[in-house]
Length: 483
Image 1: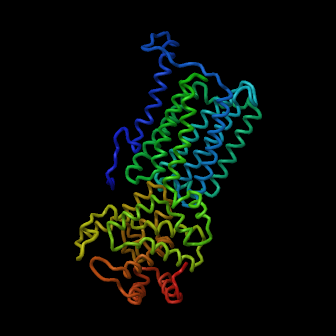
Image 2: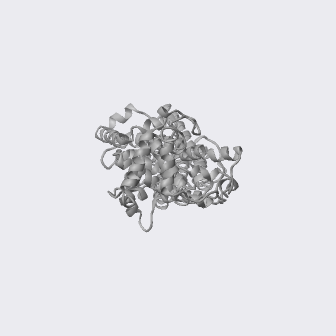
Image 3: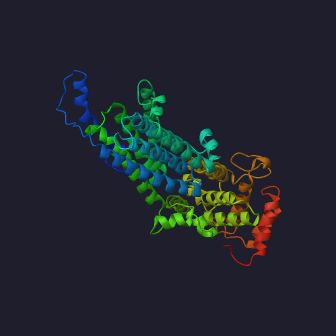
C-alpha cells in the first residue's frame, strides 16, 4: 500500500522516532560504559560521570507517580477501546494496566518504606516491562491474526480479569515478599531469557506501529512506536544497570515518558472540538447519532474525508450508509454491539477507494474490465488497511464483503449466502440504495421510488429478500429522517 501524503521522515522529525529512541540509549552507554569496563579490569576511553544517587525516597515517589498516571491512562484507553471497538487501543490499555500494577509493586517495595530489603523490587520491575511488551506486541498484530481474533471474542472480560489477576499478584507479593523468590526473573539464567524476550517483543511492536503510522498517520500509533522503542531501551538498562546509579535512573524517566507520549497521542487522535472529556462522554450518550459521531476519531474522519475528496460524487456516502444501516438494524431490534458494528464498519466501508486511481474513480463513461477490477479491489484494500488499524473482525467483514451477493456473484470472494454475515447483508442493501439515489460522474441520481424498485427486483439474488422488505417498509413507513 502506498503512502497517501508526503511527510517528513528525516531523523530529526517526530514522525521518525529513531533519534529519540537511540538518544537515551547513547546517554546511558556514555554514563555506564566506563564503569562497566573498569569492573571488568579494562581501561576506559573516557572518565566515568556515573555517580551514585541512592535516593530511595525519590525512587518511591517517581515510581508511584508513574504507576498512578499509568493506571489513569489505562482506564481512559480501555474505555475508548471498548466503545470504539478498536483492538489496538484495548490491548494498549492492557499494556498500561500491566505497567501500573507491577510498577506500583516495584515502588511500594522500595526498601525502607513498607518492607525491608527484598526481591520484589527487581522481580516487579522486570515483570512490568515484560507484560507491557507482550500486550504491545499483541496490539501490533493485524485484527485478523489468530491470536488477536481469539482475544477479540473475550474483550468484555479481558480487561477486568487481567487487572484483577495482576493486582492480586502484587498484593500477595507485598504481603509475603519471600514469594518473589519463587520467580527469580531478575536473576540468571531466567533474567537473560526474560530480558531478551522483552527486548524483542518491544522492538518488534514499536517497529510495526511506526510502519503502520507511515500509512495511516494516526497519532496514537506514532506514540506507541515511541513507547515500544523506549521499553526496549528500558529493558537494556534493567539488565545491565547498577541500582541507584545515575545511568540506572534513566529507565524510570523513560517509562514516565511513555505515559506522557500516550496522553499526547490520545488527546491528538481522539479530541473532538475543544475537549477530549466531551469526546469520551459522547461515547456514553443515549442518542444514537451522538454515539455514532463519538465512535469516530478525528483520524478516522480524516480517512473518510480523503476518500470523499478523491471521489466527490460519494461525498457523505459513507456517513449516510452508516446511519441508514444503523437505522435498519434498530428496526430489526439488533443488539447494541451489532449496531456499533454497523456504524463502525459502515462509516469507513469504502476507505479502500484511496488505492483506486483518480482517473478510474471519476471516469465519466463506462469502465473497461481492467478498470472494473481496479474498482472492485477497494474492498480488499480497505480490509487490509483497517486490519492494521485494529478494527474488530465483524467490522472487517463488513468492509471486505459489502459487495458480496446471496447468489454468489459478488466480490471479492464470491462467497455463498450462508457465509455472508447478517450485518454485511444489511449494509449491502443500504449501500446500493444510497449509491443509486446519489449523483455519479456517469449518471444523475435515481428517484427514490426507482431505487426501491431496483432493490425489489433484485431481492433474493443481489440482496437478502427479507432485508429488502424491511428497508422498503422502513422507508415507506417513516415520515421523517431517523434520529
